[in-house]
Image (cartoon, rainbow, N blue to C red; front, side, top):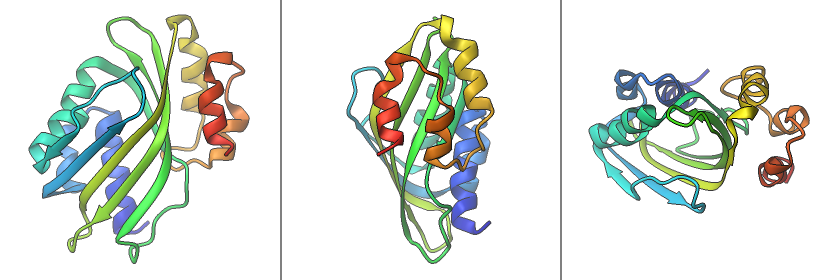
Length: 175
């Protein structure tokens, strides 16, 4: 795996496993984050500048509210000659306070600096579905059996539980 793929994978593991110290191995010190949230079911600040703000938003604050987080890049693994890399993603998690489940999807747009770390990241959240806590085991069993963190969209769609509320996410996966 190349440096760019490693930076993406390091970010995903840092966020999903609530390990903020890892983000220094994914982002440049002066990195920029832009959030484009196209759903009302989750909120984030629109921007963050620098590794400390990004760490606060994407790991610390996110980790206070969520657990059992799984994030999957649904496209090919980037090569190191790609300074810009866009991929679709799937994410699932449970809310620490209520036990409800969130399943979402969207796009990551990564731009890498000269040191092979992420300099700019735009995260577009297209959909975020909230499910009752009664779906916890079904969703977590599904997510925990997908290839992590690089998963073909077809695999995620084919194995997705037949829960009607996931229709929008399923449509995103099979587009």
